[in-house]
Image 1 (tube, protein in one colour):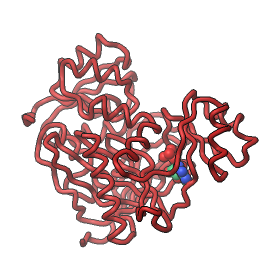
Image 2 (spheres, helix red, strand yellow; image 1 turned 120 degrees about the vertical axis):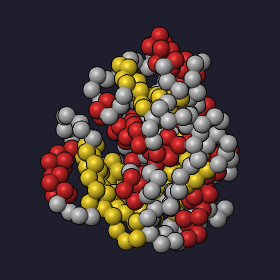
Image 3 (spheres, rainbow, N blue to C red; image 1 turned 180 degrees about the vertical axis):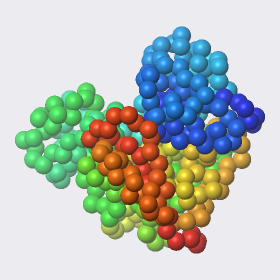
Image 4 (cartoon, helix red, strand yellow; image 1 turned 90 degrees about the vertical axis):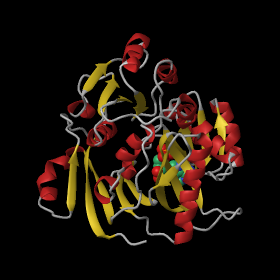
Length: 364
Ligand code: AMP
């Protein structure tokens, strides 16, 4: 892969905070970013050199955008695959449509993981409420019914406690395709972010532990306070998934840590992947010399990957809704690194920023 010289333009699909922080990291390396998104106002637009306001099904605008940039990446994994196909006629897109197709569909994602030997919760694909009623006969209740697409922050997910609830759950889930999934009795939830270049070189940040509030990530603790053996299994699983998918860029892998190893000796199960920067990697901005956003830029521009070894332990807290009114409190704390995304409207459940607290110096 050729290295893109400084001054090149990186196209980013999506204008949210992940695009904003990618554009800031890109600027540090002398690149300029061109954001393509449907909105006229979005967090990334404050910090990018160019903006095209367009829908993801506007082939004409996508083609003009693609011709004006040197490489394209994305900050939102639900970009329609057709948009990527249009762009790829003119400019390299990382990650590509084959990766995105799998990441957009919980069924494909989990089937792919299984195929390459990575454990997941037991699941069954269901395409009607009749199929759902049939499938749950094979599970101990309760189970989760999840829509295969557009599920994030707990959206499109319904718990079924008794078989009588199946039909109502199907309606509530609100999709024509779903998966029934066994409940995992996990000890904790962790994630690993892997960067991979086109030539196959990878680096992985240390696994972190995540806790949620109202289905939204609340806190990330880096590193996850787990044994070396579990941390190693998590990193190996994430790298294996990135290699098998052939990701160029980033892959965030969310995992459950089981209370006891399963029958195959695995202690981690894959829950979800995202081929883009991830909320659980925001701590790397303040605790690593090369943060996840710069790592993405390096990977898609053909630069050497940076070090994923942190210099400090850290705890990241998401600032959600009107909690952002308390920003002065964090500004007064010398251990707090505050990041606000410049969103004009505060709404319940909206991610307004995050704050990272630096802890002890990192020692391996
Ligand atoms: P998801 O949208 O699949 O990432 O799920 C959102 C959250 O629901 C996860 O972070 C877990 O806390 C919980 N969850 C999802 N799947 C399961 C499962 N199979 N067993 C237990 N908890 C789950």
